[in-house]
Length: 148
Length: 148
Length: 81
Length: 81
Image (tube, rainbow over all chains, first blue to last red; front, side):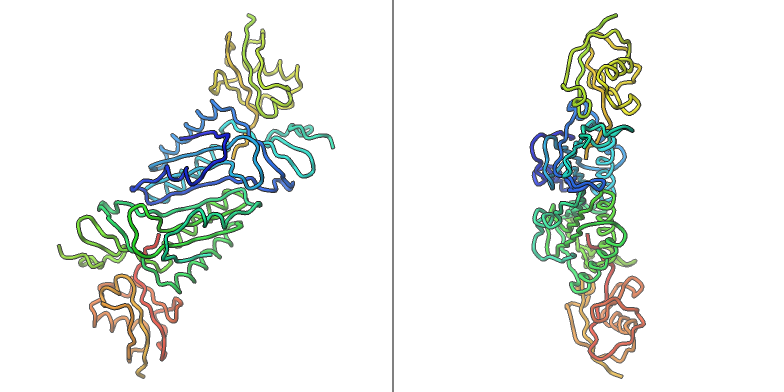
């Protein structure tokens, strides 16, 4: 299942949903808010999602992963809202009989999620500006960074 | 750090040791005791380690991973003793700035641990026999499986 | 051929538009034409080539013909994770 | 050339030997020769080619010459994880 969550994620509760006596391997990925990006000191982040389509596209990614890898359970949750440094932004967990499939599916889901799911990230910098990531244009930053 | 633990592993406490505001990615791997192997129903496992050398070889693997990938923290713990179905046998966690390094190092550590660290696994089967994994010889199973 | 469509804005477009959604009466025929009209009107920085478009909560070609009551979202480059 | 060495047994070798460790007086010269002697004596199923050997808690070549007081471990195929 793929979910967008306005509430903080609980990795322990999430991983519990993957438990299966047939599984020999569980791979998880957590994306954390880090304090630097592209050389700038980051203070906080906002994530925003286009919920209905994010849910559909996420579900398609999970289906694709199930087709490419032999897995028992996949779960992915992306946080939205205002996040602080160190906060958990995205959690992906996969249970499989064998570790190759667990790693492969987990990697596939996070890679495709970042590339395709309509979620946006705005970084707030120590220098005072803020920017929507990936939205820069050739002119001034497209993210509302002040001219200063 | 690489450790052998006779006590049950606590993934929450382990992952807490990886926290770092510079980290954008955390990949973890858990090896679980599964209820089948090679077509046989498994009831339980015993793990046994040659502690001093397991610790040294594990530390070398972590050093190799640090050389191959850009990581902030790596932690790996392997359980020994009698384990039940679903129990956590091995935990590997990696925090890194970027996810490619986190996944790569996590995969490297579990692959090399399984291939090189002197730890052995005895499976107990529903059919009554038991066997040391990988220790089979051309003759009868080398693991003390009864002739029945 | 005037039709009324519903547009929701996210992220950088929401900020540049100054609102999250609006109902629009338009004479444009396709999603691409509507985006160009809005871009001119509101000065959106991003070219259509950097965006995708969703019609009625599903990805759609830019050439999709607009129909009365359609819901549109112009999707800036995503950045989840 | 008789020397006394300490041997610890793990996993399948521990079970086939029936004990976890022992002190041995041996006239064999190398780790490989000692394993063959023990294999003949105790009927170990695994050939040396399937094993590795550790001398004084470190992997060592099978050709390592035994010295008085050495600690040896014959390492069956590993199966962690």
